[in-house]
Image: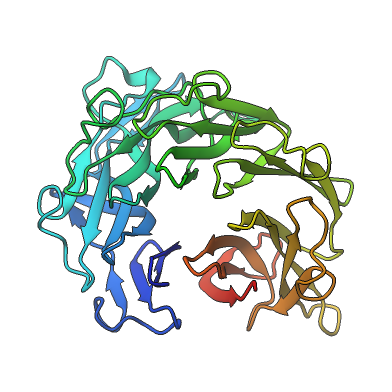
Length: 404
């Protein structure tokens, strides 16, 4: 999910891009009644989309990777597991859904951006993909490039791909940005930064890139936050080479000023930590940067967060409770708002909380959240079946909240 400057909303799955107006109606200028099939080809290879963004001119950017039409693979790791050859790819669509011929080569930029898997440094075949993308105030695409790596997880052995390696920035025309990184648009390489296949990218008001994800290979050990200058160099004074690691915590959101919100669950509670732009616990928030919230009792449970321009923290979760009988269930979204000091905001909803049902949902698999330019909260709830595996149904519900 991504939001545009005029309140437009872009939604992406493996097959389709949906563009909505600020009122939630299909943008009929885009594709066929607001729906467009994801382009199947880029640079003659098969394209797979992973992330979406909207620039200031209403153009839609798709981030992902391409693979050869013939399934070519290479062996990775000590167990020689087969991995598809791939390259990172960015596509830009005009407001009507056509590929933008003024971007890259016919609307697409395909490259490995000099990124190599550690296990494949001697090989010429690239194995790269884009784990997340956004666009800055000058319509320059910014994205995280990952490389295929083998890791040993908590149990047994397995192949884990696309470990994020670096942040890349292009010009608005799709060329490597000579003012970013070492003059080739590529930022520093991050060693052993996990979080596959998804990472969160953010930008400060000065277009300084931020990246948050998982610390550790295989078994998650905590959260990592990376901060770069606007020129793509490690931000001076922020951790070690622009990176800070936080044990036993999970990354949740970037506040507008460049801090971070982290969280962990413990004994039926949510421990929320808010960091300053320098990566230190925010002394205003709870007195030491940390507050504890009681979890809402229920069945399945997921949580994410956001922060608005007034310094308030939003905790968004879903839960499922039986609505009638032994098998019936009903899914709800909970939005809690905290003041900058970490107290519940009594002016919001009922005692700082809003609870709303997810229409037609018996179970929610995951949540995505975003704040639009008007400060409204968007929550995308992916629906899951009410079974033991909680498999996704392929459907989702988009809800918007007025915060003031």
